Image (cartoon, rainbow, N blue to C red; front, side, top):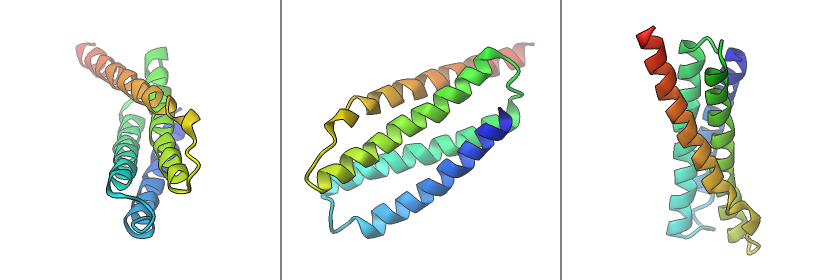
Length: 129
């Protein structure tokens, strides 16, 4: 599991840099200010969680259900949250908003919150034992 977590962290980090540059330079003439801010939110959350995945991939042995679930919450939550924002913004800019992605964003956010809760539980558990 460590390898998967580290690879996802690296891929998400790489894509966050690419998408951030794309948003800053390639999308300015196609998106309004609010759309750009939303796109940037997706990039920020993606980078935050890329770094977090790398951190947890280093510090946790993933020898229990809770640690594995935490990792999946972060991997899937990041994907659902950030990539649904990208899809919503880019499709709206083209005039055909993919509305079905609307509920995916809060689902991703919920998975991220659950991942953070499990992160805290796992840290406390590791320091108590």
